[in-house]
Each structure stands twice: as C-alpha cells, then as structure tokens.
Length: 479
Ligand code: NAD
Image: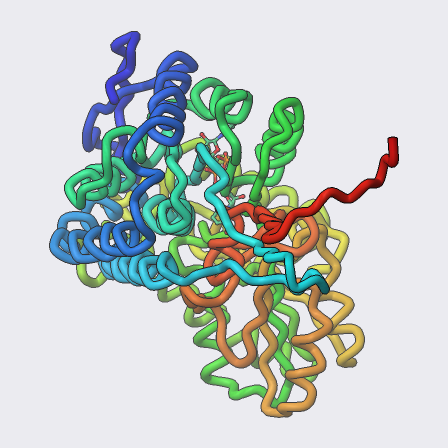
C-alpha cells in the first residue's frame, strides 16, 4: 500500500551507507487505511469462512515460495541488516520452518467438551480468531520476527497489519508479496511502512485493532502497553534481554569458549538473546578470558556479502554511537577493557557502522554495562565461586529472556536451569530455538509467548458454547 501523502524514505546498507531502495514512508492515515482494510476483510470478507485446511495450505504455500526465493531474500536481509549471507540464508530456512509448523497446527482442533454434570447439556469450548492484529517488529531479525507473528496469526484465522522497522523493511515487503502470491484474499495481510511514533502508534491506538503483538525495546514496550490500555487490547510483548552465560570449571573448555564467542558476537551482538553476560567460575576465569580474547581479536569484520566475513556492521550510525557510548560508561564504572572498545581501522570498513568485538573484565553485577542492554558486540565478564552465587548473578537483571549453563555435572545443570528466571535456558549450548518450543520473556523481557502452542494461543480466544439440548421451564420465578 503506497503512502497517501506520497512521502518516501531511503533504506540504507549499513556496510557502506549506499541506498538500497526508496520505499513509502507512511503516516497515521496510512496505518488507519490498512487497519480499515483488515477490519473489512475480517468482518465482511471471504477469509473468515476459509476452512482450517485452506489456511494450512496457504501457510505451506508461503513456505515453498520462501524457499523458491531463498537466495534473493537472504541477500536482501544481508543488504538491509548487515548480517552475513550465511545468517541471512539460515533466517530464510528458519522462517520457512515456522510457516510449515503453523501450517501443521492450523488444522488441529483446539476445542474441547466440558462435562456439565447434566446429560441434557452439551458444553463446548471452541477457539475463535482474535480479530484484527497489529504486528510491530524490530530491525535485527526483520523477517524472522515477522514470521513468528504472521504465521500463527494467519493459522488462527485473523487478519493483520504488519509494520516492520523503518530501518529494515525490505524482507517484510517481500514476505507480504509472497503471501499474496500464495493466494491470501485482499485485506487479510496489510503492510504499513513508516516510523513507530506515527504509523506504529496509530495501530496501537486504533479502536479497530483487537491485538497488538510487538517485538522491540523495553521502553517502546512500556509505551505500547500504556497506549493500548485505552482500547483494552490483547497485547503480546517480546522485549529485550541481558542474558547470562554461566560457565562452571568442569565445562568442556573448547566448546564453552566457542559458544561464548558466538553467543555475544553473532550478528554483532544485535540479538535479543545475546549472551552478553559471561559468568565464569573463579578457578577457570583467567584461562577462559585469555582464550576468549585471543579469538575475539581475530573475528573478521566486513561486507556480509563476502564469504570470509564473520561479522557485519551495526545497523546504523545512531545505534553504533549508542553502543560506543557504553565503553566510556564501563571504564568509568571500573570495568577493565581487554579487547576491542573501538571502531576498526581498516580503510575498507570506514563507510560502514562497524565496532570491534569488545570484552570487559572485573565487572560487577550493579554496573550499568552489566545491567543495560547495549545491543552491540560487548561482553562483560563476572566471576563466582559457588553454584548459589552463579544463580544469583544469573538472575540479577530486570530482564528474563534467555540464559545458559555450562557444566558436565548433569544434576547441577538441571538445578541451575530450573532456578534461572529466564524464558529459555540452554544447557551446554547457546542460541538455538525451535518452532515448536515457546519463546518469550520472564520479568521485563515481555508478556506472552511466541512459537510453540502458546504462540498460536495468543492469536485465538476461547468461547464457551453451552447448549441445553432439552430445555424446560425452570419456574425460578413462580408468579
Ligand atoms: P524499537 O522498540 O525501537 O522498535 C521496534 C518497532 O517498534 C519498530 O517497528 C518501531 O518503528 C516501532 N515503534 C517505535 N515506537 C513505537 C510506538 N510508540 N508505537 C508503536 N510502534 C513503535 O526496537 P528496535 O530498536 O527496532 O529493536 C531492538 C530491540 O528489540 C532490542 O531491545 C531487542 O532486545 C528487542 N528484540 C527482542 C526480541 C525478543 O524476542 N524478545 C527479538 C528481537 C529484538
């Protein structure tokens, strides 16, 4: 849908600041028009009468089209976000799996009979779509985050408006085109491009919208929760994380180092579940940090399209400034810089928003660098001597998105995993998620879940149908 005022915005490649494409820059009026289209399609269109089987087939067709255009989409995601082409390709595969997963669930009958204790009564709980859903996504995993919302919303029979981040809209535009090609009726999936403060806010405030599902920063999440209150919407929030990676001295050293690096420096740390807080047992600390720093220094920064690039740039100049500002904050607080902390010097990287992988040691739990989400390639290292203290440090954050524990002691791994107040815990691993397993945050990391059965339940609402099969006068009132 084009912007009614004719405004446009440039989408910039963070590797070299070249303009990839100019797209519509929508405002409140565009958001309201998209909501109206979704409302009409839900209230009056053919979509609500589609069978679960038809919806399932639509989702599977989208999955096939994503694979047909895999190379093109991966390239677009790389140009737009700066991530490597390998990561872009993995994202397309993951997104495909999400569409097929919810295609599989669309046909599952989620209703049940309830025994009313009276043979004349047939009591059923059925599930209906929530209605018109506003889906608002961030810039770090544009396609992936969109799929976690779009696929279950369609599986459940909703109509929707999606607003991607103004920084990285390209693969969402492509996804919406593919859903249309797959045969979704007009008005079922609507795209709004534009800034959060206007186009996004209009979606949240609209009385025509029944549900807002948002992924993004904590402050924006708070604001959306407040703005949605006036119209008492369903909301689902996937917010930030400050995720602990706890390593006991008996862990597999090589594997733990390897994963610790990937946990924090993958996609230049722009991952909500990035393992930015390394919490290491005292006796292992010095050897572990030495090995980690040696490898962090060797990470090859570059153009995501080049095969030998291991990490791309940050997404924008503004974001790099924010990440960089944390170096001064950390030093002032007494953390000791042992790797990175600066922009790279290579001439080839000067037009991109690069920042070197950075490691701080001597960190303590109340430092801002340990508590605030930098959303960049910055690792802090804390130490512990007892299991109890490791758990305490792991939980010492307002967030609760994800965490990991590394140990060869299975009983200890289980104890720590159960006591960490985070929505996902990895044991001797870091990072994987599965379409069939719920994803989401404890504490300030969010409300609700994406993926898995609960990720579909967000988009359904229960209805109790109580049927009296043999009604007779009750004579409650006798006169
Ligand atoms: P952001 O909060 O700045 O923006 C996210 C989206 O919200 C964008 O589309 C933006 O335009 C829109 N928006 C901004 N203000 C709005 C408003 N007032 N009303 C409605 N919409 C508005 O976040 P970001 O910088 O794009 O993304 C980074 C953040 O996302 C990080 O904090 C990260 O942890 C989080 N994130 C969380 C998860 C998760 O699964 N929990 C996944 C990815 C990213």
